[in-house]
Length: 453
Image (cartoon, rainbow, N blue to C red):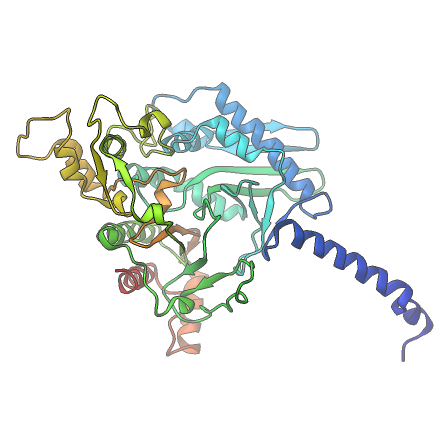
């Protein structure tokens, strides 16, 4: 039986108001976004103070980059650079600022644009995922950038491998690897310091995405209950949910399979496992199914994609285009005044060799491919779509796919080897995520090959 004090605390005069307050708070959050897993971080939110400090610190950090022009070529000092900025209630360290700034520029992103997105008046959003990770996930208000808290070990791993990560993006500028745009540490009085990274969101823009998947190429714990039919709940599904479906890319299939092989082979050299292939799709609109693009526009996009002289480690010009400027997208009136090139929606994977051979600037054909085209083929490049997030957007005949490889920090060390042995004994007939990096690489590539056509 309850004593009197317990009865008083559990009585209607106390429990009902508490339940009412909780219902109101929950209802307000649901009304704001009508999504489960994505909440606006308002003044009542536990992370409101932290995210306000993040925004203030990031604004100052990016402003420092704006005020300090990038060097012509990155040096060892740039990779080791740590800049501390003191604010009223906290201090924030920024690691390898020039390196990440050069990568942002290679993605066609201006510093002002980046600063505005990270520091806009709109509140950050908290993303509650079904991941086992203890990290906190935040999204900028425009959903363009992810901020994720990381352990000290994970940050050290990224920074120690930053140079070879940048070299990989330089060699394969159309890589599917997630793009890390900044690494920071924030320290508040009487609290533990927090490390966090800024990443480009793979699922951007997400307005019309109909399904999201996190793929690891195995079976154990790889099923998630789908959202109720006709609901607006965000659920990231897994491998077993995708069974019976295919990534239908048509002419882009060879390019995609090759790029997955390249990126996973790179991750194998880092001795990591447990990374995920993020996958989302949305149906193409009717006008996207039957695009009519000017020949001049295709030429301009091809020239941007073939540009082999720039790189993330040289601050001269972008390696990979971001948004194609309006003047670049418009047909050149003096060229092909009425000629239109009718392409299917997957035109960003077209045979760029034949396109380049027809360039007006190169009427003579020598027979051998130009150095640019040889570099294009060696780097597994494609004609990118005209989006702010072109590297992770691939159009198939009927669907637009958002694809990227994330979570690359899990090293196959002593603990993971023990976990592998235990799971091998515990689940002898199932495939699980904790396997050696070569096995993980091979299995994920095989999954992609089996589910792509």
